[in-house]
Image (cartoon, rainbow over all chains, first blue to last red; front, side, top):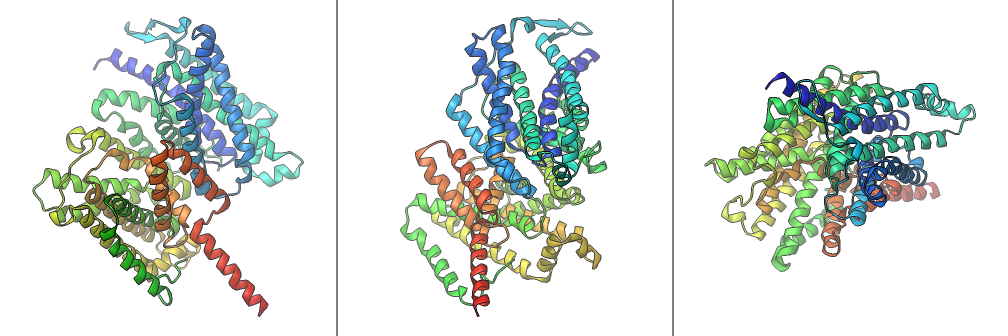
Length: 293
Length: 318
């Protein structure tokens, strides 16, 4: 195990971190403001990936297809989530977390089977666009896929956009206030119900975006939601519920322990991130950063 | 709310139900007897899940881990050591209980959703180990063809064994909930702060609930080994835990027999839906969604509410 090998794995871990961050920041946003532990978030990620496949194929699979998929797939997911929020979730905000958890699990079962009905059980693959094909040499000369470089650029961009959205826009400020005291925000004449809907849709849009971004790097398949939603939940818990920077920190820890753990102990590399979560929660039971709860 | 299911007028119905359950395998074909066994052992699993969830107020969200570990421990002891299977049937639940203790010690410091999430994390760790440790657990293939003692190897023998163990376990859990310990546990569920104030060691009581739940879940795992002779890593996956929790919720998570009822409904629907379509998840999702939306206290809880309302009305009229 040499330094370049470790560096290479670290970069692989960082690309994974970007995906994990995008998905879990959406989850964290919803948890922080609406207090819904949304298990269906993973299914929306999966739908995002499958939609990316369909849209990319619709536009001939090339460059155009990729960019259209990157825009279109999250929008479709946002529409689905808007429908789900307006029809079901908006009536249930006052319910216990356990109920919401199980209800969103029910949604994930329904979404899972709908995906199976629409796209079938086969593996799907989305082509990497021409611009991002090939490799760039890393320090030490190891080849690193260009698409992953694109991912590494996407991560910070989305983090900054999210920061601007939460801290610099009106809707962000209102949602922060609504997270603390819903009634009070309603009392000053703001339509809290729609604020919640918008936050929910933005969170789900991020899940769809994560799915669309991950699609060219993995084989899109049923069951990709099950592993990811657990990881996203653990990241959110580890970082502090509702804290977007916590989600970033958690995703970093999760992604890096996963990729570097494989170097340390190939057979059981999978257990390192889980162990990291346990260690973090042992010492900081409420997560690394301040939770909004 | 543990109502007097085992007493008074209800007694006669219990005897009738027991007699029916004893005669059933002599007349029904093999498929239905197998299904009944599965219902019973999932009922035991769901009841043991509800023990900390409904009566202890702990978010026991990854209960399947104890079930799977109990089953795996039994299977490994039977296939890899020369010990008697009967001994293995005891080792499995004990290992589950020990795991319940270890995970409980780590989780019990947290509350509600954090508790559940940490438990899911720890459980996923156990699942990952089982999934990857090919030489010991068989990895994603699991372990097949586990030999059980001759007397319970036939489908009827397995059924009677399951019936006896499930019945005994339910009775023991019921007695525990009726004991002073059970009352304190429910007191903690209703108001942990006040319980602590009057001198109850909250964490210790919760920990004991987790150990008991782990033990009986392990026992359900043993029963699965007896009925199906296989173990596989999906038995520890978190989706199964969610399904078990849905069983509790569907039947009524604040009643003692609710989880058993929920398990029966879900297994029955799954069996019959699966003969027509592969989209079982869709059906379960819709059922669970409707129950949560319209009957948050589950079927039995709903009936209790209705009867209570009627009784109240009668009182008012008098």
